[in-house]
Image (tube, rainbow, N blue to C red; front, side):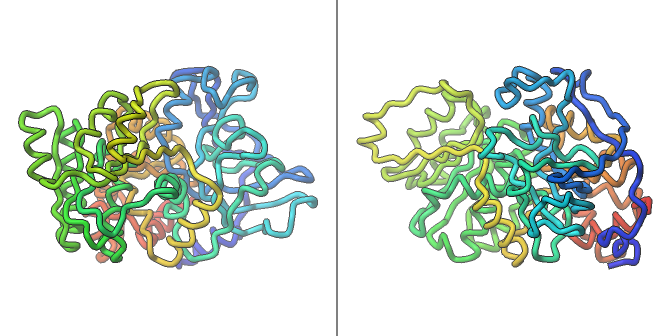
Length: 420
């Protein structure tokens, strides 16, 4: 670690009197504005924090599009109080009120369980989230802060949250050792790629020894090319046949049957189209599992109970994660068992954070975008393009040019651009 990073991590610099923050006052990107406001000090039960990283979720896009009509904002005066997006957060506590418990320590690093179950609200919705440089949580968030115990990077920490959602979806029903073929529908997006990496990792670690084929489908050829480039080597090393198919192209059915001649044992649906999800059941083997992960609207999609019964299929669905899932994934990341940074595709600073949200809305970048709020002027940049503007050491540069993000790369980025 460099001297500058030592000061940054130890809070040994003057905190600014103001903070940049992105505020949403109504529906639409035209109501999403950057403001500079006074940095608040905590009250007796409050926790002040610095946001180190905040990865962008498609849920943030939904809030921008729906505004006050979003179900999580019912009864919230958005025009008056504003919404600060961001729930995939890695923070450092800068100060705390005298009534805050001992488990929260100044200088400590934490991630946030966004769903505040006890209070029927969530961080990044009616509770200000991570698209701010320096913020304050009230007492409701205290028990939903999870301490970072290992020496992991800021990006790796904030990416625990989406990975916890992936892990939670397997809580009741996971890939079995005897399963031979797994199909990830809509696998070209960020969450689909997480499911893909988890599946290949299960084979690598011996948890799915029977796995012979993994099929990824997506309607975007660009996404398929990116997935093939990123995961083909990993699949080959694990002895897995890795097939990418576009369901809109001729010969899709034949290609799927050729890839898995004995049928599909486990399907992960990351496609928010009910008819497509229902139709995939015809490829599912008896005793097969359909993991419904996509954000389908409540009340949509036909379910034929008799067919599920006689085909002996298991359906499971998931949205979000629990505290237990967050802790599990965080500790696994700290032990080096899970590489959450593998999901990072681009980085952006505070002033251009809105462009990151727009890129997610437009599916312009095939994996996760990580905001570094303290790097105010960092433009939206794909990881492999960073060496054009940031000087990395030779070994790190070689990895970054391949699009691979890491704690070492992050440290060199912060050393180069931190304004302290």
